[in-house]
Length: 495
Image (cartoon, rainbow, N blue to C red; front, side, top):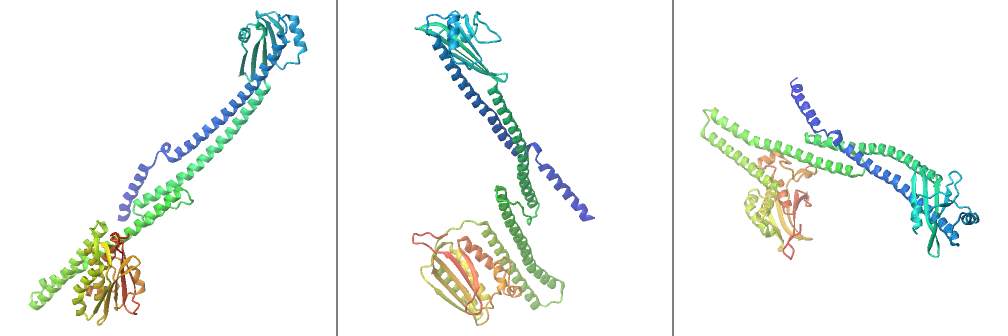
């Protein structure tokens, strides 16, 4: 019941956060994508329904203007053979001409009186032609006007009839064409029907595409929220090869790194707590033994106090190495200078020679000259010290430790080989993990903290190097290799 009561507020809070982070529908990516898609389609449809019609209209207008103007010029040329225009002369001339394609033909004299009208419905012969085109033509200008209105093309043209530079009258043509207008209307209806189909298809596709896009984005957003809630093992599943799939892949890689980091952090905290708790428990036990036993003799007290001092030293070593790891994790920039790795290894060997002699260990060295690199000397000393000290501590009585420094293919290599008990093959991948020890009981007995190799490798990597380990080819023990970019002739290092 207590767990249910405690978990219920968390569920409610999570639901509130989801509701608070929910995007309004009209501001969602789905709506924006669909509207953008539809606007593009609408713009294409508008162009498709206007540009072709305008082009067809222009073509029809140009054709009709040329045709009417040509007919008007032919009639005007035929009438300009005499000095005057009369009904008889105009009628005779028009009878001789081939059939005119215009709907209506009018011929007016210089005063604007109609001399000829071929209309069978509204013959206006004898009336005055009160039309703007006629007035302009009598003024000596060629005129034509075209328009599309009420489902038909209406074309008008007027040209003057000139004899020896004098305007005798004019010819006026009018054409009413509903056939080509029907063709234009049919094209317009066809385009409209196609546009309706395109709009429907575009709307469906917009919904499908926006749904697919937002579904991928929703899955990624849900995965981010679960990761934010501490579910580092969760992965976003988005198939395909588009940018969303690539983004999901990057997210999964980030989640995997976070999961690894979190697992390492928890393991590190657990191991550090355990390692710190052990010496503290020993100190507490020893002090309680002294305080609660009134009859304890001074020799026992001294022995207990000496053990307390040893545990305090161990606690100090763990704390110092934890601080060293913290500084390494921070990645602070080091002051670097050319350093001879052989000279550093020689100093470390001299420092640890008494320890080796105390354990009956033979310590040899083979140090080549000209093995310089660009690094911090104290850091190199720390690496060499950890490797050589471990080789001595975890050796067998009468064993040996061989230290060598050489230059190989642009690298300087520190090799530390021992003839100890060796490292089991299953433990090799983990020996550089923090607090990991192959033989915990023996490590504690020899004052080990399980941090030395971790510090050595992190320090080496800080200087673009690395540390690896292999079984000793001699048959017993292990050999550690610390490799660093060699100092180039120009004074720089490879990195």
